[in-house]
Amino acid sequence: MSHALPKLHNAMWPGLVGKGGDEEGAEPAISLDRMLELTAAAEVNGQKFEGVDYFLFLPHTDPDASDDQLKAIADKIASHDLKVGSLVAPVWPGTVGDSSMGDAEQRGKFVTAVEKACRIAKIFNEHGVREYGCIRIDSAEFGVEKWREDAEANTKQIAATFKEAAKIAADHGERLAAEGEICWAGMHSWKDMLDLLEAVDMPGTVGFQADLAHTYLYLLGYNAPEHALVQPGYSDEEFYAAYEKMTDALRPWTIDFHVAQNDGEVHGSGSHDKTGKHCPADDPNGKLDVVKCAGYWLKDAPARGIQHICWDGCMFPNAMLEDGSTWNTILDVMMKVRDAHGWE
Image (tube, rainbow, N blue to C red):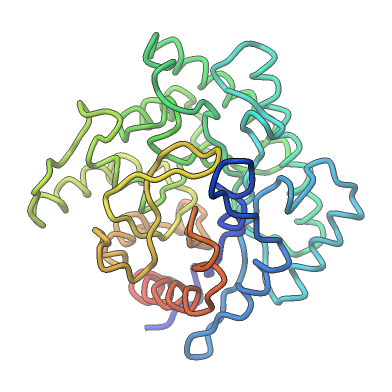
C-alpha cells in the first residue's frame, strides 16, 4: 500500500564523513552539488527522493555563512525538487563544537554549534525549503575510555550540556535528536543512551535518533558487554525478543529515524572512529530485515512528530556513491519501509 508519509530523504553527509584528510588512502569529499545530483537522479517506479538531511559544515556549508549564502543553498536544494529535513549540528572537535563532557570552554563550543545550527534552521524554515525535521547532536566525545573514568559524573556533565543546548533549541522551535552510536561516550549502549535521555529529562525537546545500523551493535553490546541483549549465534526468536526489548525502551524517545543495513562489523575511516558499519541496502551479508526492523521504531511515529525517514550510508566508498544503481536500490528499500509502516 502506498502512503504519503513518512517522506523519503537521502543524507548528504556520506559525501563528507570519513572523507578528505591526509590519511593514506583517504578519498576526497563529494561536493554538495554532486550529492544533490545523485539524489535527484534516483527513481523507482516513478518515485523519487523527496528531500535531504543536511550536514552543517564545510565543504558543504560554512556554519557562519551569511543569510544570503544560506538562502542560495536553500534555492539550490529546492531547484532539485527536494526539501530539507533534519540538520546535523557541527558539535565535534575540529568543527565548531567540542566535547559535551569537557571543560567549560569545550562545553561552550558545543552549545555554540547548536546555536549556529538553529540559526541556519530558521533561515531554511523561513525560505520554505524546510518544514519538518530535528537537529542532530551527540556527545562529541569519541570513544568511551575517558567516560568510564567516572561514568556517573560524566553522564551528568553531558546531560547538563544537552540541557543548555536544548534551551536554545526550544527558543527556536527546534528539537534535538541525540544519535545513538557505539563511538559516542555516554551514548554507546542502549542502556547508557536511555540513562542519558532520562538524565536530560526534556522529552519535548531532546529525543533519540535511531539508526538501524548503529542500534544493531547496541544489541551485541559491542562497547558495553554488560548491556548485550543477544550473543553470537542467536536465533531469530532470540533476536526479535531482544529487538523488542531495546525498541520498547528507546522508541518513546525516538524523534528521528535512519534506515540502514549492517553486516555486524565495525568500521571507521578518516577522522571518524569505529562504529556500526553501514552496508548497501541489498548487501548479502546484511544482518537485518530492514523493513521488519524499521517497523519496531516507526510504531506510533506520527505521535512523536516524525514526518520523514532518512537513509544513512555513511562511509560508503566514493565509487559506490557515484553509482546510480546504489541510490535506486536504497530508494526501493525505503519505499518498502513506507509501504509497510507508513501513514497518511
